[in-house]
Length: 274
Image (tube, rainbow, N blue to C red; front, side, top):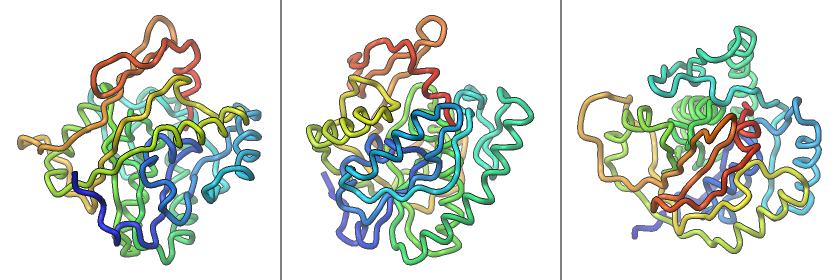
């Protein structure tokens, strides 16, 4: 196991789409960065969720910096069997024209806010190109941060989470992940305790019985342009399994193929956030 070099965590910031993303995808380094920037903390369609997210900040041990931007109900609107990448994130063939316009329009204020708040950062950890388990909002944040990395000169870092729904888009990038990667262990007990803060405030949006992986891996950008050719690279993935299980139900499993998540009657609906 090769650990992250010390310089990778100097002047380091995590940028995520939603509250709790930092704990799900960056648990191994969460206590070692200066702050976490959350892009879309407001949930207009679930006021209680917004309220809980703001309440938990007072007891959270890491600095959470919320942008004044709101979620969109964009989850599961991209064509994941043949995803089309755009400068804004992904094309959303399953979304209404109004939602597609809102998704595109959100890029400019997101870029403006992050440009201001990332001044002075040397390393920025953010969503990978396929949005971990496949979230259109995560992909949008990835695109914006990647552009700002080129413009502002900080070093971007991406994690190794993926799912069955993202395999087409993940495959396009794996040749670009054929470089040195770094592994960091996760303290599962600590992660569970932080998840408890979210739960107490009614702000946890993931699996109730989620089991954290033993470690997670990171690779640095900039990444080469995605390709449909080549043989990929030897790169470990923390694989999640999401599936519809009658109506809007979903389940999830860990990378070892064991089904660790129970069938959740509300997960798919709760994941339909921007």
